[in-house]
Image 1 (spheres, one colour):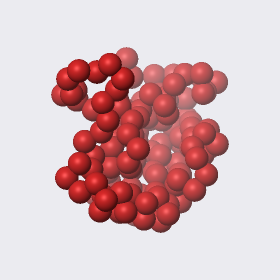
Image 2 (image 1 turned 90 degrees about the vertical axis):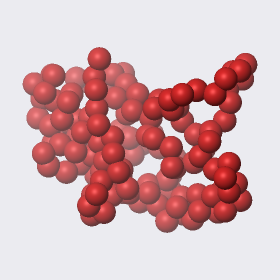
Image 3 (image 1 turned 180 degrees about the vertical axis):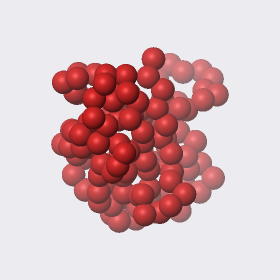
Image 4 (image 1 turned 60 degrees about the vertical axis):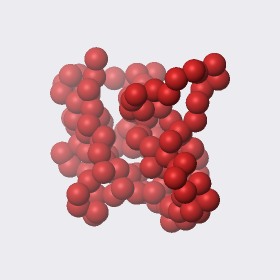
Length: 128
């Protein structure tokens, strides 16, 4: 299993989110990490809704940084103000009786939720 780190960088110059997925894949596959990060960033750019990110960029040694667009941030602020305490709690899935203890691999309508790693590391996206 490929374990990757996705985080909110302390240095805001690195964007709102960052991942080391290219470094992990490059090591496993003996590939150049910055070339792989550049390729992954290009694939992600094509696959996300237009206007969601201001930038998706590959940076040495092979990280991928994501900066959300102002439009998305504005929409989420509005969503927070409307939902108040219910914001970020997620939604129950059809037929689900109990709430889940972990939301690591769930996707929600709000950008405060974790990035869904399988969507950016799914092997069919890449010719490795």
